[in-house]
Length: 214
Image (cartoon, rainbow, N blue to C red):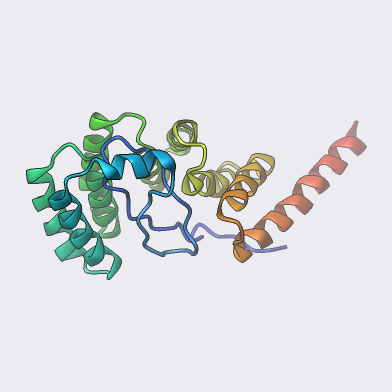
């Protein structure tokens, strides 16, 4: 049996700038920073962004991807002073604050993003991560489910639903469903493939036990 702990890696997403795009692309590995925005809705939203705004955002994103969270935070804050209507920038600030251990500031940034777009998938996913971290597992599940409802191809939310249901809620069948959905979206994640195989064995064993009991 594969051992799991609460330290299972949660992917870090660098969120799309676009104000109206709640969709995001998959990640190719744990802790990898990438710009979400592979969907048609995201591409259309990007086309409407002023060039100057996009340049400022890309500079902030580059600092964040390089791991310079101090500089990235300053650049995102500067960006939002000029372009306050883009929830993705607030979500990236939430990720930075969370990485720095400042959950209060992270929650404020998430709330700011959701005030602009209540169905922003990346913001809902980040909200779920904050709630899970603080032990609010059912509220975290609700946030993740809102994210995949708003954007069914948002792989990170399926991943986090898999983690939540396996490690914290002990719902192995539901965890399996979300890891399978994640795998279908990202194509090939070797680590998650192992988790899926393990969960399939555990779910089958549980079903056999239930049948014998009946």
